[in-house]
Image (cartoon, rainbow, N blue to C red; front, top):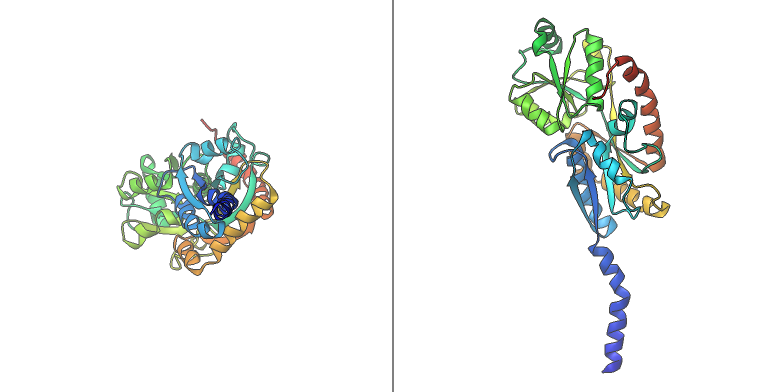
Length: 316
């Protein structure tokens, strides 16, 4: 009897660490309110990553400063892989040219995975007149007090995509910054703002429902989810803008842990149902491991330097 009890106790002791590991919860932090594109992508990934990692994976939102607030906190977290941030590229490649940051985008994080790449949708709401993009822009030029465009926040890629559109079209547009794409879309639908520039995922379902109209996309080619919507270039406006979402961890994460998480991301993005959902948001599943994410980030950082400095925009 004693021998059997000892054997059972020993077996329980040996399996205890595995049970504890199962009970640990990885958090993927989002620096925006629920309902936006970053939040949606994170939730799609988290559900699929649970099985690969053998632990619970949840999404938590901490909005603030267009995603910069949570990044400032991430750099101080333990490098154990239990706290990660899914960040839009703006916080990494636009913000450094505008703000005194609480983090260094190159030195203070561990790049884990590039998740998706994407362009932006230029969407008109009921506060704008009927017609194509050029008609709406002509109306805005004739009504400067109403020539506003909404985005998910100041200092984001959509903010400067709208600025480039304004310059290329020769129509002064005033930027209205929101704390996330979802609240911006709600005001677009409500007619409080006539135009919005942001990821297609923020307005694509409203576009399909007839509540708003996506008039253009900012990429070099048409968006797979919006094959009938022309690019800006197709409409004679020489302007393009694109971006990415990346998964980052605190500095100093062990290489084997980074590789393990990246494999879970890659496996999730290979699933046909996940790919179709992401394409349906107007985004492109485009996985790359941490080193390639770092290269992509460096390229975008360099690309945005000149237009941002030339814009004369001063962060408040």
